[in-house]
Image (tube, rainbow, N blue to C red; front, side, top):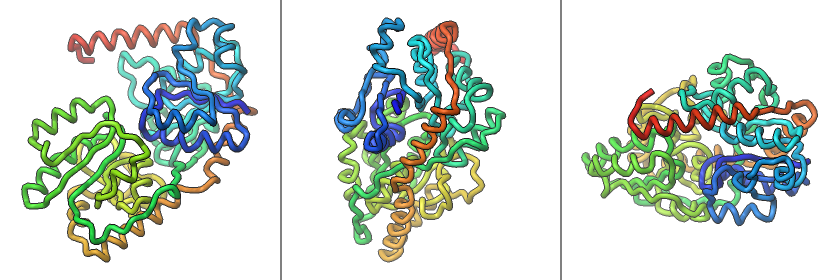
Length: 399
């Protein structure tokens, strides 16, 4: 099978780390993989780790978008195209249509609102994808990481996704070394991940750090990652006079993941990094996406199932501050028990069966899936709406 994966970029992020783990496993099972990226934003370590296992292409090299050039660009007709974000679906499907290919569509939804977020006037691409899910793409070809994401999309799109496959996150926990941290000085908290609008904890936890340091707790919060809200977060840290306590490091090499956790007693975050941190022996405290308050469903060990960070789950909600105080006040034995419990949760995300589940979905979609046709007029509409949105934001018009 020839699988085309279309993603936004290959910088550090949850989907990107998933692809770095998944693609070699697919290749070892005989799947021919082509990874097409919409941006040239690439983590060199990720790039080098994937090059032996797949062809990596950039969308700008597909220009001039003629049939002959596109067929040379893709090499051969992909059996299945796997799209992880709205723009990837729109542009990837359009290029495949222009190439004259009959490639079947599979979507991968790994963030709460990825394919169902409200579409602002300049976000015509979201409307295209949402209509395709409602009217064209079968539920069996839309992969979700957990039931919460599936149910959220079904509710927002008002469509039945009961038959959508649930494939849990794939985390290589075995590559990390579990370290006992009971006697460790409880000073450093670490977060690793994209600084994006839905990861609101990057902002809401700031006041907690301020409050706890003011009452005598000697805390530092190290944040690693980049994203749309990096500049705003940097400014907010300065405005709150927290530069001494909150350190914004930007993008890091992913090979340093364990290293930056060496002296951490707590990890706060979302996505696969929660699992990886617990594999290193750092208790991981969940956050709730889009929340305007610093809230959590608790440590990953306290949560049943694989729904950890989605809003509106039917689970007990804690303030992040109370959970930080709980771990600060824990005895050495209580802390180490929490380490063990979080580690046991982490290893439930390991296993080659996850890769087999992906292949099963791709194979089924190859036979029973659909070809998605994105027209030239839809692409023109998206480009025009994006241009209008960009200009509106530049001159300060609010929609």
